[in-house]
Image (cartoon, rainbow, N blue to C red):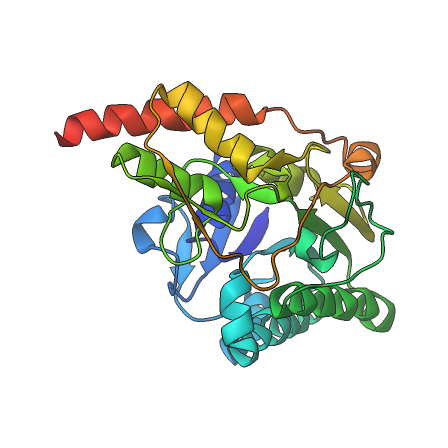
Length: 309
């Protein structure tokens, strides 16, 4: 089977490319390498280095004629989107339109990587479901929601098949702390260096952490399932940033201290996704607990640090 993965040189995308190659699929990667790296693209995939919003994206998809397009390329920084909303919209909205153009010509199914940011978080302990009210708290969440709308309308206008996956906070091997890397990656890097963990705000904001390998499994399940559906990819569990810091300190057997800085504009107070629909339509459920995932990351980080010494 022929597949295209946009953003295939990035954290989640490269992991997905590897899984697809293991299945024996023919994989073409589109990535502008602004955050992704060439050496992260697994051997056997063909890389084209240009942004998703380029005209070449639609042309390449149309000529390659893949059965499935996994669209992961995006501007994913909430803070970046607040500072540069035009660039965020160009990447996340125009990029999706280019992919849709290609899918229209090639009759490919689109599996779209969206975000819990479309909800904007909630108060109390209420689970966010696919039908929950959308109140994006940043241009990033808004641009991904706009992209979702284009995809759903494209299905009606042009018959494009799709599955939309709304990710919780993804973490795991290969994630970097550079720029606006996830909090898990930032904690991992600072703890390995013996530096205090930086926490924005009071640390009581709750996040739903889902392992990258579980996210990859959801994408693979969407190849043959979830036609025309939107599914949350999360764990239904919320962990505060303070609790996450305590987990690092306990599992790492070290307490480098904590530094509390001012909160960030657009930060949701609580984000906790209900995964029941994903289980019903994709046959997917999270397999790895946060404690298991952090323990594995700390084990690898410790071995790597010792080798460097």
